[in-house]
Every structure is written in C-alpha cells, then in structure tokens.
Length: 341
Image 1 (cartoon, one colour):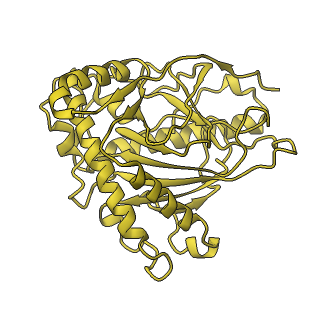
Image 2: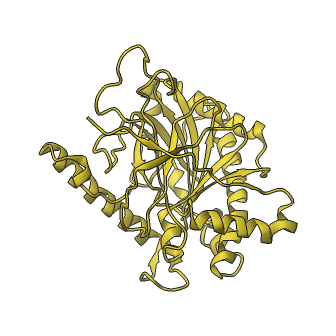
C-alpha cells in the first residue's frame, strides 16, 4: 500500500499584473523570485477577462460532449495536435492518465486538425481568439523573464513568434472523467500522474470547485526527476491563472528557474476529494522549431527548438519503458528514478 501523501501549507506566490507598463520592474522582481523558488505562481489582475475564459471552457465542453466517433476525425498526431483519450502514459505511474484532451496550435500543424464548422460551429474562431489572448499575456511574462536572466527584452518573445508557421505552442483542452464516490477508486487509476512540463512556460486555467491540482517543488537540474514527497494543493479561483516554469526555461536559465513536479490528484476520499468531471485549459508556450536555446552561462550545449523537444520526448520514452519494466517485475516504485514527461 502506498504511503499517505504528505502535504504542506506552502503559499503559492500571487502576482498582480495591474499597471504592467509602469510596474514592470516590480513585477519582474516578483516573477524571478517565484521562478527561482516555487517554479509556480498565480496571476491576478491580468489582461484576459473572466468572460473570455468562461467562453473557452464552454467551447471545450461542446467539443468533449461530441461522440467519440466525431472527435476521432481529428486524432492525436506526432505533431502534438488533435484528440486523445486515455492515451497519455506517465513515467511516474506507468499508467495512462484517465482523461481526454484536444491539442490546438497556431501554425501549419493544424491543417486538417479542426473539426468542420457544421460539426462544431464557431469553435475554431473562438479558440484561436483565446489563444491570441494567452499569447499576448505570455509575451508580457517573457519580457520580465528575459530581463531577469540578462537578455534583451524581446529575446524570448522573438523565439515564440506565433505568426510563423513553425511555432510549437499548444492550447490543450482537458477533460478528466467523473468517478463514482460510492465505490472505491480502482487500483492504478490516475487522473494525471506527477510530471513536469517540457515547455517554456505553462498558463493553466481552472474552474472553481473542480479541484485536484497539486505541486511538489524540489528539482535542481532539468534532466533529472528529483522527486520530493511534500505536496501543496492549488485550489482553483475564478479568473486566476496558475503558471509554471517548464523544463525548457529551466534549461534556458541554466537551471536557475525551477520546473516543478505537479499532478492532478486521483480522488480516493469522498470527504475531501473532488469526484466530478474536471475541465482545465493549458497554454503551453513552446518556441519556434529553429530558435537557438542556450542559457547566459552556457551550462548546456546550444540546441534548436526541435532538438530540445526531441530530446525531451526521448527521455520521457526511456523513463516510461523503465517504469513499465519495473511494474512488470513488481519492483517497488520508489526504486525507479524516471525522467520527466
């Protein structure tokens, strides 16, 4: 039996973006402090209206309410676009996340990956509009993070140019399936196993009342798993955006900014856990494929956006195979050290 989860009352930094232009120095200092410690922070007083967030959630629900046969017309591809269901395996668990998701991008990778207008009216227009809002907000954060590392202001912005066809940024709509609280949760059932993101920076939109996100800081090098054992719950609040540093930015900062482990808790206790359908929307900032990635101290060799993604996928696959082999041999999970997905 797994040991009970240990929780802390750690406070996640909340950063207000009001009067951004006049307060950019103060905001930069807060962002850098959060990036160096927690690797997570929450944005308030930002530029995306609550009504726009709710509209995108409504659009996601319309997509997920379609029959699987309809969604299967835009299946997940190696280009990180399309719909998947119960298909994402985590090295931390060796099991699939029990959810469905739909990945959208700005560029050429989305050709043929939008459902027809007569199947899902207005969805493409709505989603692209929201993506541009998330992109504009992300660019503000990129300016601050570039300043914090001593780069020129638009250094990261230019590396994430959404107007170019080779941009890798993804908007991911997620739907975690409801469970029946009157029966025990099946062994090996995971909503989202613990992992770190391999992108530059993630913006996560959550719905109030649909809890489950938990974080666990502690990684010191972006290429290692570095699992800690003390978790913090991050409760969703209307209008707030939860952000986390990804492995790409951890590498680009020479491991100064921390990419933190996180998960969506599997409900097991009806007294405290949320068992209903859970929806979230993640905006993964990922650079243009041909951008050059290297930190100011040159701790790691220079790689392109394509090369970084390929290396991350290779580590992820190797760790997953190691985990599956350990499970097959009934090796205790604590003895397996996996790379991060």
